[in-house]
View 1: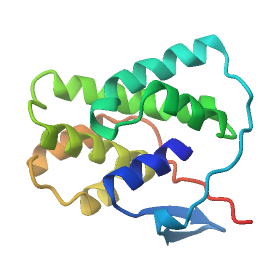
View 2: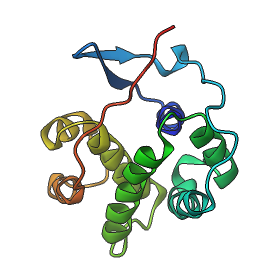
View 3: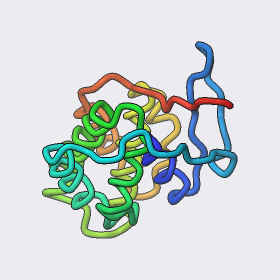
Length: 156
């Protein structure tokens, strides 16, 4: 989802995408937004987007309106929203007992963002922990139940 790309640019770290069955690292500054694929989104999808932006706006700065704009550009907004919902589910579970500081929230978010794209092992290797313990990061990553889905990048 383009939202993921925007979030990665906000957090200032590169991401990796699969291209022709191989992993390619791309500088987020080299990516251009696609035009709108959907002129509008169904009401039930908008409600679900609102829940995820309510969870993550404090971290990534992406408002509901900005997220809707990004989802309208997405080829498959439903499948990408499922990823964000899973990230929000795990984030909320972990942050019930922690996440008092911006640094903690950001690191939990980053762990989940990485896990959404990579295996558990690869996510931990890329995490570069500063606030969370390795055991906490492993717990967060292990609670994410979806398969890793790298970002698809279409070259023109």
